[in-house]
Image 1 (cartoon, rainbow, N blue to C red):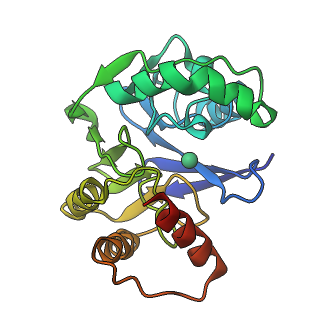
Image 2: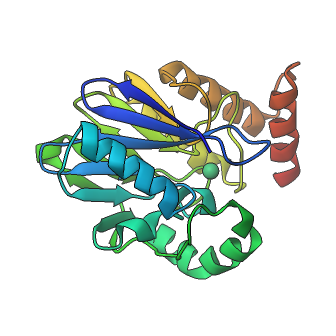
Length: 244
Ligand SMILES: [Zn+2]
């Protein structure tokens, strides 16, 4: 396992990991608040989160953690148990989905676990949004990639963490509800954004990637998608078409 660390804005750190073969790296975002350290997603298990914690503790902050899960897919919450005594925030649908599928997914993909994973759904749930106004942080429901998908917005550094809703070059559908997905990306574009941190990928993106993802989804809605040469684009697109 390799961990790459990238500083962003005045108080954000992106941790990137590449343990899953044939997939883009997975990103975890830490935001150093005045009273808390916020951590978006916990990746593949306690061993990885131990590395993240020691990096944060040594270099940035000793504040208590607030953990956030962007959605219930296994590659985003397996490290929750490392923070069992902390607040772990997630949408109520995320909690439901982890309760329903977590154990089965752990069995299916157990070869990827880093440390001994114990499935632990969020212990603090929200529906629409949950705000930390003194910290300039907000978590909000943003259904798209999955019905439970949620995002984090840091209004101080103008950083948006999208989970798997935004992807380079195009998003991966797991639901056929394109209208809802389009609404979510439209709503992202209303925000004042300087950096976009995506769930998977090597790039720190900008608003432009959201616009491109949105244009692609709209083209799917209208059946006007223009084929592209990139093999990755085609592979994702074929999967999306199959799902629809
Ligand atoms: Zn993912």
